[in-house]
Length: 165
Image (cartoon, rainbow, N blue to C red; front, side, top):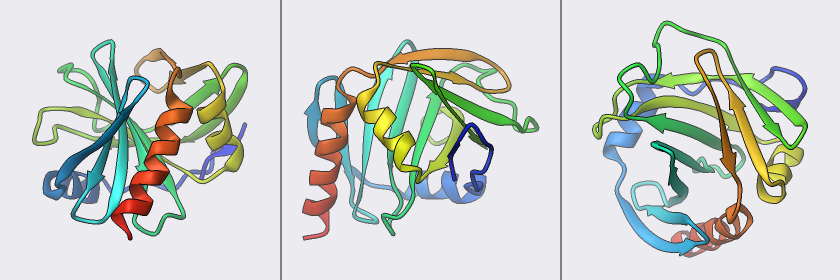
C-alpha cells in the first residue's frame, strides 16, 4: 500500500482491471466541483472522475472498501509502455508518496494508463486537502489541481452508502 516516502503498494492485476472495467456499468450519481461521481452497478462501488488536460483521473475504493485506488489515463498512443515497470511517485505540495504502478493498456474506450492502490490515511487526507498533486512515473510528469477533490470524495462516500443501502 502507499506509505509515505517508501515503496510498498501491491499490484492490481492488469487482466483483472481490464476485464472489470469492460464489465462495469456506470451511472452518474452526481457532480461535485469539477468531478463526476459514478455508481458502478456491477459491484456497488463508486468512481470519482475528472478530465483535465487530455487526462482522465479516477479514484475510488474496491468492493471490500478497505483499499482505494487512483488511476491516470490517456488516449495518447505512447501513453503507457506495457513492459515498463516502476514507481508511481505522488507529491502533494511537498508530501511525497511512492508505490508500484500497475499498467492497463487499451480499455474498451481506447484509454491506457496506470493504477496504484492506496490505504494510507495520510495519502487520503492529502488527496482531499492539498492544492496540487504532482505525479511522476517512468514515462512522464504531470500536475493536477486538486480543487474540488474534497467535495468529490465526500460525494463518493455518499454514493457508496446509497449503493449499499
